[in-house]
Length: 263
Image (cartoon, rainbow, N blue to C red):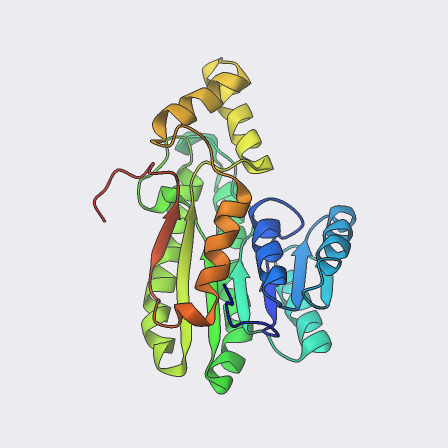
């Protein structure tokens, strides 16, 4: 399928591995020049070289911490230096630590807000004026199934990702007249390093084996397995496409049927 976005510049957060890397791969295959970012320069450079080798277009990478305004600015500034614009923004910054309410000090809450909410606000603030001026843009926020059906033990993520959802739903109406769409992607249990971290946290908290955590999650999923990052990346690429120009203000789950609600 021709997604109609060859040549559109995409900035993808936390894209050296996991869900961000999967999204970047799909966009590269669609012909998008890419701006990647992550904290660790080593895996980031490896991802940059691999993605550029796919032949979709030029790929630049910026080692930056998106939980800081300086980090967000560094990534956008590099995008502007390299390409002069950002057409597709995929906000993604990993996830806050697991644990119940009383396990998290006020500093942990501030860090979660900076990482998960403020990074979105800062990146959108930087790229949105250009999208509106060109009357074309795609903003995709990686949130979580937790915003629709809270996950036990993830109070930080449940809370702060819900704030991102409220922001995105409101912004979508404001920018729709300018040809800019805003959507959220809600990954379910997906085979990433983040899921391994959550399994380790659950195993420690409940005194169970690491494998038992995965067995518990797969038992909750009607499809009987965890997802693969490429399955998530495919949805992101479609929502970024020209074909998805009438889809906005939505939160779409990639969860194998885990969410039990009707809508």
